[in-house]
Amino acid sequence: MTHPTPDHEQQPRIPGRRYREVTRYRTETTTINGISATEEVPYTTWEPVPPRDWDGMVIRGVTAGAVGVTLLATTSTAAAIGGLLDKTVPAPVAYAAAVVFTVPWLACQGVEYVLRREPDRARKARIAGWVLLVISMATVVAYGVDKGEPIAGAAGAAVDLMSKGMWVLVLSLHAVPLSRGVANWLRQRKEKLTAEAVVAADIRRQDQFEAYMRAVFPNYETVQAITTVAEQPAPQSGTPVQTVVSGQAPSASVSGHASVPAPVPAAAPTPQPAPIAQPTAPAPAAAPVPVSAPSVPPVPPATPQGDEQQAPADTPVPPTPPTPPTPPTPPADPTAGTARPPLRAVGAPTKSDTIRAALAANSSISDEALIQRVNEVHGEDSKNLDTVPRTRRRIEDKLKKKAS
Image (cartoon, rainbow, N blue to C red; front, side, top):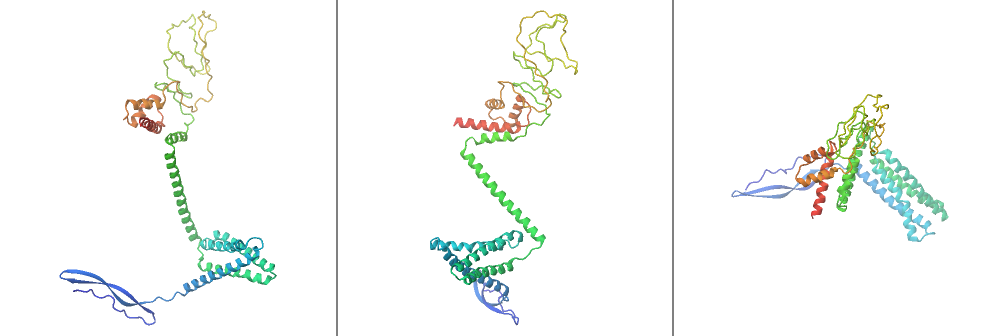
């Protein structure tokens, strides 16, 4: 059997110091035939006693005295004011309401204690506490005057004043003034933590509301897509606008004007933005032009500014069969060069139709290929990177709901 070297031997005691006897525990191990067993054995020793904290004892005593005086002052003030209010309201209500004259200035004293390291913020609580105390004392004096004993009323009011004075003394023991640098550091630290707490709470409320919207409204995804598109910035001024018509490639834009739309295989001619009116009648007899019935009149060549092309006025024009009136040519746009919304031919497929057709042909098509397909049909647009995948998800969700 083996035992560890005891470590509880008495240390030499220093004269003049106080010691006290304490019980401690040490570990002993017993080993028999190679098997060890450990147990805790109590032993008695002496340890030095720290000196008495007289400052702490005084603070605790003063605080206890302030609590006792406050209780007596609350009782005295409630009895006096309750007797004064007893003339107009029932006695239970009167004495219960009398307590209100003491509780408010005590609450202001508590707020002042919490803000003891921030004098600027504690000033309001200090002023309010003194004002409420004066009201309470004046009411007690009024009760004494009503009973014909103004001196007794003043003495009762002095009890509240002494209670308030004791709390001011107790607060002065804890209100350690801070230097400007330390106070500024403490204020910034509190501001940062408070801001983090406010942001975290606000984000939590927003997440809860969004989860509620998703759970209650089936069309929330559609509404979210609409609001997302509405939040996107408008095209910048001066950006050339391309007009895409039913799968045709966009035409080259004219400097300073909106781009000229590509030829459309239709019976009706497309108005041209050029300021020159295209004659629909055959050319004059001097220079006859063979009629080949083109689908769209050719675009006249550009002419220098101020040198407009005019039909000869002196050459007589042979009579021609009546033709349908030609729509008037729109005047030059004074706002040419500014951003305009893209134009789309009536009846042309929308982006949603193009996406549905691509999904019907290949439901596993990738988003990149789908975006490229939309760009080929409707023209290049930076918004397609965001709107095409979102529209695809919405269409697929609708198809799944119909299938279910």
